[in-house]
Length: 338
Image (tube, rainbow, N blue to C red; front, side, top):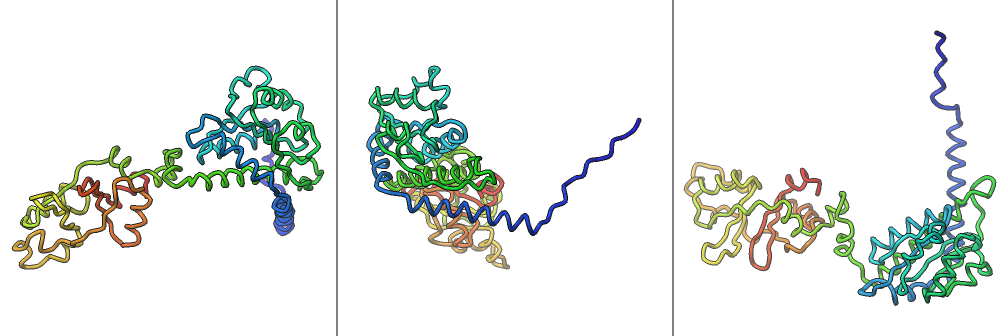
């Protein structure tokens, strides 16, 4: 049997020419971004106020984002961004909308319709339905005289830009500035709602980002295993046993009368206490007083930053005046929080 020759692994290209062309493309897209900044006007404030007045912060409305083609893909991405940053949102496929999905749009919503030309026929039915139902429309388009713009309450006009596509056809620079304008609106809404890290964490419980933004309380609910503790008068044998059995690399020292935190004994403290008189000493003799603590409703990220700043391997979690857990860097690392 004749064997076909293996195809070449890669075409021969001039690396220098490729990099130079890539930089030229990026420079032209940067020009598009600069044009977008120059084109912004009071309509952006109107759009921000319109969404703030109807969507989020206890209101029942949502920001419905729609488009077709590449604009549809951008709409879907922006709907996800809005939803994850405090503006309840959903993506509506413009073509499917005319076949029943218009039922997803409620009277308290705001529609954000994206179309480069403003003449995408798939959007006509969506926009006309919204106008009939009293749903205000924000148009994102390059043409302020387009059918979409004429039907909108607010027009966010995109500047005319030349696509970096060599044929000036494929949505490239225009797609970039459309996405950027959506990000601008999302950030403006976040800032005016004072949307903070803890709010962000509620919508991002998964992945490394979510783990870092998780509250300490959530971590304890999942991984908490009790707090190894001794009293200030505990003999050294008891302290060593508590450190070993607690598997935290440390043990808290609590006042036996009221449970108040008096200090912490770490493996480092034990090493420093090693000597001929070690077993004649107590937990109170070798403990580190005034240990670093974090509130149970703080973020894991804050705990990690404190441990890094203080160069410590353990931090004590308190709920009011009660010690509820010890966080250990080894455990945090094994569980993907560090």
